[in-house]
Image 1 (cartoon, rainbow, N blue to C red):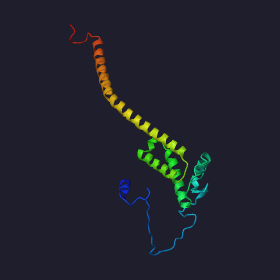
Image 2 (image 1 turned 90 degrees about the vertical axis):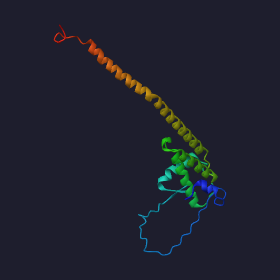
Image 3 (image 1 turned 45 degrees about the vertical axis):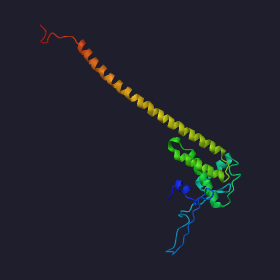
Image 4 (image 1 turned 30 degrees about the vertical axis):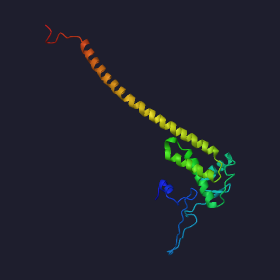
Length: 194
């Protein structure tokens, strides 16, 4: 594990702002056979939507993105089908993130969303509309945080007033009891009466 700060600090790890990770896997021995029916296979089938492979559950949403934003992928450069799928997954995840309530999103989430947006734009997606939505969500998040801070501040100011109010209520109740006692008629059956 390496933090982004360390990654940027180390020379030679990033090439043009990108990190390439290469892994080599060697199969030493195959034990047994994989006998899995196609129905129970964990591999998900994908469906083509405007040249991008998406999961069946994402088809309608992806189609609606292309219908509402006709030029969304007009300048998209990558041709590798795996990269295209990865970019589309980032785009779909980003749009779902932006549709969350500001209460559900942290400032880190919004920062990551901004990075994902830049990543998608660099690949050639036309996302002015999405940037506008992201900025709206960021503004809502700022407003939410400001309101929460103001509410907390007001609550701190109200606490001593509430205590004073409760103290006065108790004093009023005590004086009412004294008033009732003072208004009570005397009885001739008392021993103190001559």
